[in-house]
Length: 336
Image 1 (tube, rainbow, N blue to C red):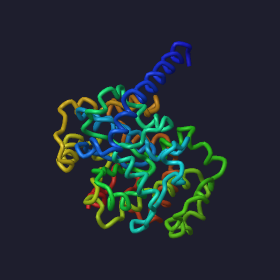
Image 2: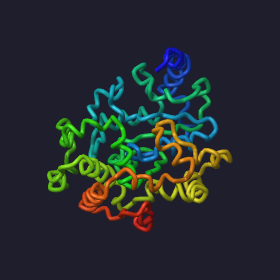
Image 3: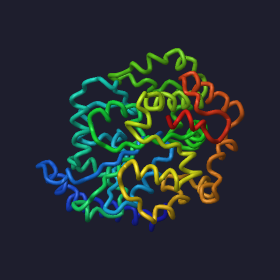
């Protein structure tokens, strides 16, 4: 990083700190007193890391007077309001379970009442928060809560969108990111996390998990665990809007019109200009593929035949038969 880039980054951070104390905290304080949130529409994106959620968020934040809430369940570092609940990454809560502390956390989150300085990063990605007090839409982008979807939607009106992407595409992208290097050292690290108070799902698929011997198999098991709950739920695509990344990519007009229609929100005309723009989390090697329309089959160039076979075998052992070696899924099994 050059000196100029470093200074620019520091100036941006100082600007965000100023906005937090000048605009965010007063807005949240008013909400705690019951001031504003009844006029706000929450829209929540649930997906997998490297699953397209940042791209989806960039489309939805084209809505006027919208605010992006970035990764409210990312726990490093845990901010003040979330730390006492003792969540783990990719927390699972059975649909009927009672967890009062978790319920209270999400109540504060969805009523825009979280205002500690340590929660600054939730709103860091917004260009400006000066008009947060006049906001109409809060867009929650979350890649750590797929397994919470049934539990959350029983309690909160959050207009959930469940974005599903081919496991080979997701895992191919994850293997390029340093964030997942720890798996190369220890395939069993945090899988499951011993601090997780709900390990029922891991126990259900223990025989599959115990067979894992390669990094791509570990990532495939994570993908399958995170998606088997919403995808196999009897109210999939009814209690939440299920969206195939591949269909959104191939038929953006049709899919977006369906999404906005189900949300009951007018679709901004300028949203189409953003469809082929890479998100800010896209790695450089993938940007040209996105801009040229070659994104869906890119994983075939980076995964070996053996890796593809291993990934799909693990996914099928979780009972998910939506995907094969084709770039696109069997849509009839997604859009039930």
